[in-house]
Image (tube, rainbow, N blue to C red):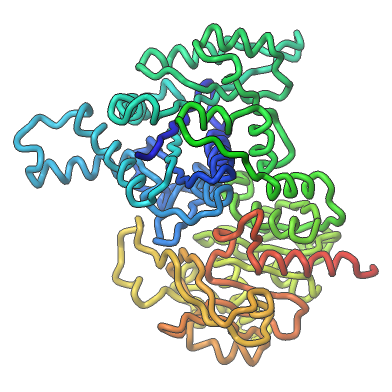
Amino acid sequence: MPKYVFVTGGVVSGLGKGITAASLGTLLKARGHSVTIMKMDPYVNVDAGTISPLQHGEVFITDDGAETDLDIGHYERFIDKSLSGANNITTGQVYGEVIAKERRGEFLGSTVQVIPHVTNEIKERIKKVASESGADVVIVEVGGTVGDIEGLPFLEAIRQFKADVGPNNTMYVHVTLIPHLPSSGELKTKPTQHSVAELRSIGIQPDVIVCRSSFPISADMKAKIGLFCNVDEDAVIQNLDCNSIYEVPVMLEKEGLGRIAEERLRLDPCEPDLKEWQDISYKIAHPQKKCQIAIVGKYVSLHDAYKSVIEALYHGGLAHDASIDILWLDSDDLKEISDLAVNELFSGVDGVLVPGGFGGRGIEGKLKAIRWARESRVPFLGICLGLQCAVIETARNVMGLLDANSTEFDPDTLNPVVDLMPEQKAIHDKGGTMRKGLYECALKKDSLVWKAYRKDSVWERHRHRFEINPRYVQKLSESGLIPVGVWPTRGLVEIMEHKDHPWFVGTQFHPEFLSRPNRPHPIFKDFIGAALEFSEKPC
């Protein structure tokens, strides 16, 4: 029988429940136990796909094309395993299925209620993931904080799990905040006590309390928390602020979290092999080189909107023993500034990255940044919208098609170098209708990307509606922007490179989703390599 770990949070949001869940997965995997991780989001949206990045951060795409919460990305990166849409449950999905069952008459005339019908649906989805994954341990993160009305059905469902599968097969981990009061110099435990009391009031007694803090928690304070919250003193785990999320597994192992989980779940004890993560932590703390990468995006006010891009850059840095300094530039701010101001803004930059996005806001600023990178021969990486903008920039400034545009931004343009995919033209619903998930890409021999992958064919994750217009591909090639990766099934252009540029690559897919700290994505690895080489050039 699989074991289940449920991770909840209290006091405030943003404490790092996802990193805690992912780190525990890492510790159990390091002991030889197979692991899968799930996220339960209490919002009524069916998925994250229609939520603004400025509200909820990035939409993380899985192999099967599911539009999921960004925490799914953390899970994949930490346990180095591809997950699916089933690993992200939302209120919208649960209620949608319950209502569909009621319409089909599956409840045999019963009055449909939160308990047992909604909670049963939640539990069935958790058990299905457990069954299909074959994992020894299923870690389930409950989104939001204890006390949120939206999360009550999920909390009730995980409360019932203990009775359903037995106390030796369940473990509850509660993540809380230990605030520091600068005026008195004291750490305060009362918020944690209240949070645990709220959790216990709905029938869940935590087995472990993970305490986020900026300062070390004394043994006396751990004993106090354990006493008032009815947990063993050694099950009060401190999770201190650190320089990188990739230091957390090693830190939590030192606190005993992996051992406690094995004991609580009656797993066969195994000595963990964390050498890989110790090496990563060492590299993070002792970089040998550094470079600066400018991210030119339209959602830069919330860095989580580009979470996987950020992490993939750091992974590329790890491959070269380098630290990455990110210069955040709002593309909307570049729209009206002069070429001289652009030069000044980008001075010192070793690479330019234009990430994905939707809509016409900030596009002209992205085009300015791309032109600067192309003309200055600075390494450039364009992802999804970034590739499409690179095509528009080349069409305007190299081919001389001054009105060239995407029909997303100008439906009436006379030169639609980027256009809506034919299969998208009859689609009107926004949710879940894009070209999403894993698709094949055939690579041109001796291209920059072929040298990165060392493969003739790769599979990458996509999320888009628009494509490079095939009518312009030949003219773009003659102007130096050549296709070096195509979808073999239909000939869709997936990757383009500027042949006369040291390193200029645009991808229609999202390589960031497949990058791992221990296995940096080849494109990000080579992009950072090119940036480091550029940084060493004499001024």
